Image 1 (tube, helix red, strand yellow):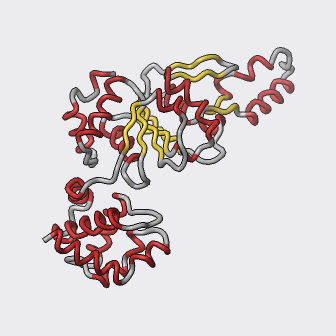
Image 2 (tube, rainbow, N blue to C red; image 1 turned 120 degrees about the horizontal axis):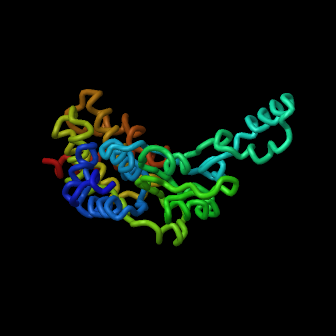
Image 3 (spheres, helix red, strand yellow; image 1 turned 45 degrees about the vertical axis):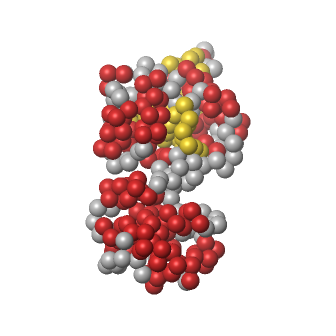
Amino acid sequence: MSAHLPGSVADTQALLGRGGYVADRALSTTVHLALRMGRPLFLEGEPGTGKTEIAKVLAAELPRRLVRLQCYDGLDLNAAAYEWNHARQLMAIRLAEAEGRGSGLEAGLYDRRFLDRRPLLDAIEGEPAVLLIDELDRADEPFEAFLLEVLADFQLTIPELGTIRAETPPVVIITSNRTREVHDAIRRRCLYHWVDYPDAVRERAILRLRAPHVAELLSAQVVAFVQKLRAGGDYFKLPGVAETIDWAAALAALDARELEPASVDETLGVLLKYQDDITKLRGAEAARLVLEAREAAA
């Protein structure tokens, strides 16, 4: 496996860049170590800082299959790892009985042909993969216990079949928006990195890469506006990088050449996702930030 992985931190940073991800040195180092050491990578940070995108880029550039387990409240082993197909088992029983083969059928009901693979088993058993366990903090805390065997040994034990081990361990990326604390048992099995909002220089580089059609002056002002918004405002949900890209693209679609208070007020629904935040920013506060952003980008 290692022969196909980047050989240095600079190579890993370049690999991410080829996939359209502008990573700083610290993040590139952590990703590189996770790849070279074969350890799961636990990425924590505010929503919209690009955690999920790292898994997508790695899958595209390594290249490997992307297997995504989207976590949610109530997620259980049947949805995450595997499930016995009871309908097919019942059909097999009825068919065997009809053909007079009912004796000794029970042992054969737990054959692989009756097993439905879910993301965890699929990532272990299939072709080499990047396994994305997305927003683990949304799952119930007891669910984390199901992951320990996978994260520690890249294997999954099915009582009726035994232990299934990965021939090629998946690259595992776990993300969390920190709506609750993830247990130490998970953290100990992973390398950790806090993915923060980018500084102005890196956000400009991201915008240049992801929205190259946006004029340079407008791009600079958008980034300056968003940076000041994040730094100085008490908002329910600050805009992430995705919102910066969308907002710049929306303004460009309206033929804006630079920020104007009126166009900002009209497009705040692209940048902010809660009405209370929009109401707080619209008007005088937005006009003030527009002026500061123009000065900063001049």
